[in-house]
Image (cartoon, rainbow, N blue to C red; front, side, top):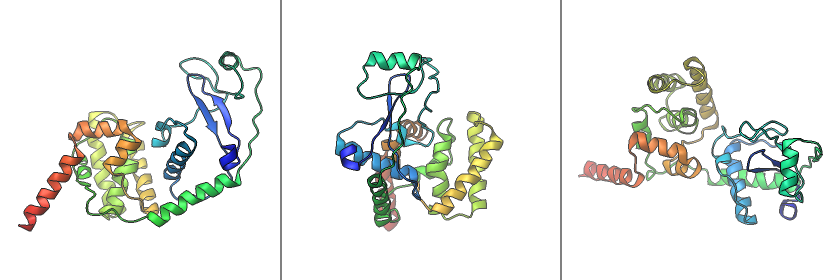
Length: 256
């Protein structure tokens, strides 16, 4: 990272079994920050041959542990460390922090340029989804309540689908989503509550309308959030290739 981007990573031990690496850059405006981080992390992984825990980048619900907080399973602290420490030294510091390494935050101009390049790439490649991209599974999903992954489906799939593919008004989309998530609530109580979830529906509809982003394809969910993909498969018994074949057959039948 030092050679490629002229940045020095801050390293933390999570208190359990992972290490967190933080690199810092000056603030920049990002229309789609989660997508940008996913693409940038993939580039770094490929260039530097580093394996990441991709679940961190799959959803905004995945958060990094705040330094000096206690891990609920091990009762160890998340502590800053130096790379040359032995595992014994790391575990000792995590059990009872004493050394408290001061890690200086240094922003990197090259890192900022790399992130801006990712944004420009998105603008250049931005285009509406083609006819070959089947979204029929989303219509099926709106008829079948789910008990898990409701927040992620709302943000990444349902809100952008109704606003930016079907081009409904916010009021129409809100009515459909409220009816759908009432069914979901009957299967398993919405968290933190049904009333709070209604506010989330309005929030994500505003975001989808403002940013104009398309819904995730099923293949994207499989790649970025396998757990959510499995939930959808179980509810719909969905198979992308079979669905594509059915769609093609329907089109041919209509032509005849």
